[in-house]
Image (cartoon, rainbow, N blue to C red; front, side):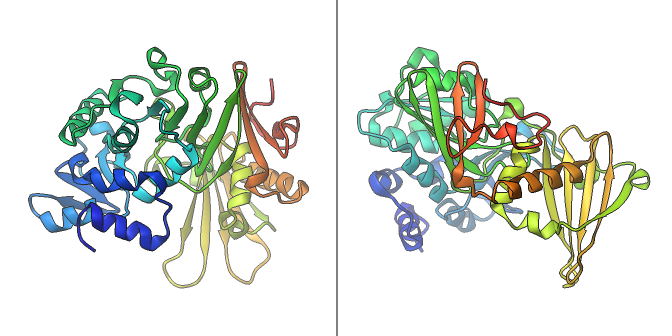
Length: 385
């Protein structure tokens, strides 16, 4: 594959990615113009000066490229490196744009400019005057504008809080976010009164869905699809770090057993989605043993770092060891949510929906009147207002 826009297109076509009306933008906008001199792909740091061929190959591969860690702060050698900006995987960008269903005369509001590449694709197709992008990090907003200028494009890029949208540019026909949110801000609904909203969505436990909502008469309604992995909203970002940062008082943990296999939870995306509605403020981490034993520990860790739980999977057993510590019993909460999901008939995520009105957001199953908070044992989920 050539390290060029043509090579990227060839790779995307080979994967069966739907390019649709975005093919010309992918072909014309050079991704390399939107990347810094040093990038990260997975756990590899690539310098353009030291490895120009590897750098360019990464630029035109269908991979997510980290372009900033720890909000751009200098980091010590042992400090946890949290990715805080990236050039998203092109195939996932195209998936979101396909869901957005942009029409040639639409005005688009983007939340999360990042490197500016997504705004550039939009501007190439629609014209720069039809694209507004909001970026919370002023340095990134400035760089995104420079990157677009280098590509011969000039969408309006504003430094600000994406949750507020950009009212002075409204109304918009399409709104797209490039970071994951646990609540759809009503400002997005108000600024696209007859439009469509596409955003990565979910709380800490399962932030791997696109929410696709259509807006009518002051209310947005939609469903979930895809499995995107985007960074969380910087203004509502929970704590993250090494596993040991969340574990404490291990000697004081309460030990029990369960008949619910941790693997049953860890390997079922539908179960994870519904459990995530009940545990939006805790995250899970499956850690597989590296000795070919097939053993796995499923950790559940509260965002506030006060509570944790673990459940140990061992093949060919029917009882699994559980340890829990803190004011919450996180395994018990997850097991109760799993039981509620089973009681609903193990529904797929496709049956879940989301509604957003000025008075709040709520989740439902099959129809907006069937509020999920009434059946899921959630501590914090909001019900229909």
